[in-house]
Image (cartoon, rainbow, N blue to C red):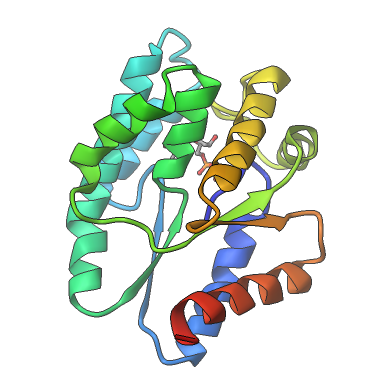
Length: 201
Ligand code: TYD
């Protein structure tokens, strides 16, 4: 599940989890960056707002390190046990935030992340499409902003544009949803896409 900050990913993940469990699946939820003890420790470094001096490459490698741990400790074992995994952000977040937002280039991001992912690849990416302004406004009502959320609006606009470009480039694996629609409506769009892709074959 991908999308800009404040796009409602977590709500949709909870609903999708319940839906798939009712359909008989064992579901594992993983969040990024984090999802393991080591990943959560890396998350604290990445999102710490005191670390303004962090270089873009350091940031990319830290996200990839947390991801490598998640893949090896959680995702691959779960898949091997026949479970389904829903990730709150994955490699496309790095593609847009570090590749496009930070300007490191999408190719570099995929190359570095190839080492973290190995043979693990998402079967479907749902992109919650929301304007950067609206996303940030939703976030500001919440908690203290983290290092990424503190970035200016131009950065977050590049992120949203990046997601939209990727969704256009790879329609076979990225499914965009209008995140301003009511929660139930979004949920049913997601479940019909999941049905279409995984069960009606
Ligand atoms: P998080 O609190 O999980 O954001 P949200 O609740 O919006 O999902 O914080 C993760 C932040 O890290 C978010 O701003 C997106 C950013 N991020 C990257 O820049 N690259 C990545 O590879 C990942 C996974 C997240």
